[in-house]
Length: 362
Ligand SMILES: NC(=O)c1ccc[n+]([C@@H]2O[C@H](COP(=O)([O-])OP(=O)(O)OC[C@H]3O[C@@H](n4cnc5c(N)ncnc54)[C@H](OP(=O)(O)O)[C@@H]3O)[C@@H](O)[C@H]2O)c1
Image 1 (tube, protein in one colour):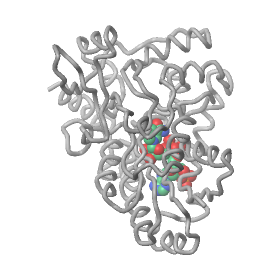
Image 2 (cartoon, protein in one colour; image 1 turned 90 degrees about the horizontal axis):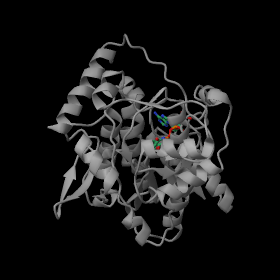
Image 3 (tube, helix red, strand yellow; image 1 turned 135 degrees about the vertical axis):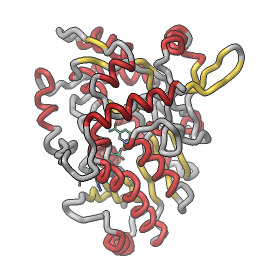
Image 4 (cartoon, helix red, strand yellow; image 1 turned 180 degrees about the vertical axis):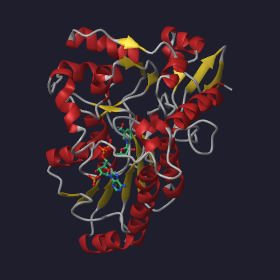
């Protein structure tokens, strides 16, 4: 039996669907039914139920986007850094294998081949770098699992969410038999508030950047295949091979879905961060060679995107139902008291994102 934590969430529901499809016995535990954030309770539960694997798909990703994590730092830290430690501790105490859903957003940039030399480029949105990616994407390689996070509290540029996720990896990385699975901006064919394809279609202006992406179904299948094949425990980047720009994704949307609305873009990063974005975006490419070498199959990102759009299931004009879904499960809207002592203020957030952006360039 697999114990699934965070089963009410977008990623958790992906795991639940795939486990169900495989006919694998699992218990989707929700915090409402059982407070798995309490070490003592979780320890007793594991000792009694003896699952073969605990999947921790719980966390705070921020809704409608990562900016929300800058507003709700306490909850972000609790869900993304403290909870994984509680879960892994309970697993180690009961000798239970574990799998933790992390993120690829603990990196920024990519490795760039230039004049026969490889170097890390942290800012893929620098105009000359972006021109180079558009002309020769093959010159850009992703970060491997051997590369330490470069978008974390230990670096000059990060956002709060990525900081808490990297810190969790650091804390649990060496603890007993476990997997750390890193998806990147999940999407699939079902319209919804957490789906990258829906979000692009809903934003009044699109932020154009280079990124790796994970098809949700491919991602959870790959994660469960790793475990099924008894692939060595450790860290795995779980994205579809390749990288795309948001502009390329919009072009696919226009070609396949033929929406009537025009798409507008933020002119550049200065305008994007000056226009309200609070959290610095990670914009990175992941290398998935380690995953693919285990024999786990992943479609290319272009193929997965085209297929999702060909089979697109809209939920209504202007994603209105998707918006309303954001209020309930799996993705809730935030209710934040901005007047909290020590709480975030919009001006601070904007300055921080801009200042940190400057740090990336520096
Ligand atoms: N969505 C993305 O873009 C993305 C990309 C890469 C990685 N991830 C990672 O995947 C994980 C899940 O993300 P998601 O998109 O599925 O989020 P989601 O749809 O908002 O779901 C979050 C899940 O985590 C649980 N949760 C939230 N706060 C919690 C807390 N303080 N303590 C315990 N459980 C808590 C929720 O349980 P309740 O129902 O009880 O509130 C829910 O089951 C996160 O760790 C995230 O970093 C997400």
